[in-house]
Length: 150
Image 1 (cartoon, rainbow, N blue to C red):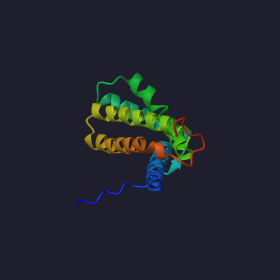
Image 2: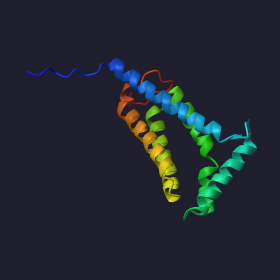
Image 3: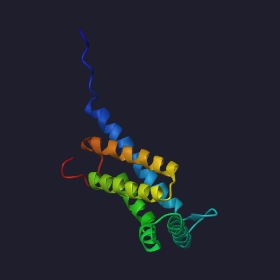
C-alpha cells in the first residue's frame, strides 16, 4: 500500500504566501528607488532623465513610437512604488498582484520589442512569482485592507 501524501497545513501556506508577498513588494520598491538614482545620488531630476533615456532607447531600437514609450516610462517608477507599498501593507492584495502581473507583462512586451531576451526571462520569473502568489492569495493574512474574498 502507498502512504497518503501529506498536504501542507494552512500555516505553511500562509507563510509561503507571506514570503512571496514580501519578495514581490521589496522587488517593486527597489525597482522604484533605482529609477531615481544617477551617480550615487537620488532626485526627481535623475528620475526624469533616466525615464526619458529609457523611453528614447526603446523607441530607437524598436517600432514603438516615442509618445507611447514616454507615456509608459514616466509614471513607471511611481506605479512600482505604489504597488510595492500596497503589497507590503496588504492593501487589496489580489488586485495589487493582478496589476503587478499586468505591469510585468507590459514591461516584457517592451523588452521583446527591443529583443532583450535576458530581461524578458527575468520578467518571466517575476511573473511566475506573481502567479504563484495569486494561487496562494487565499492564505493571505496580516493584511491592512484585505480583499473581500480573504
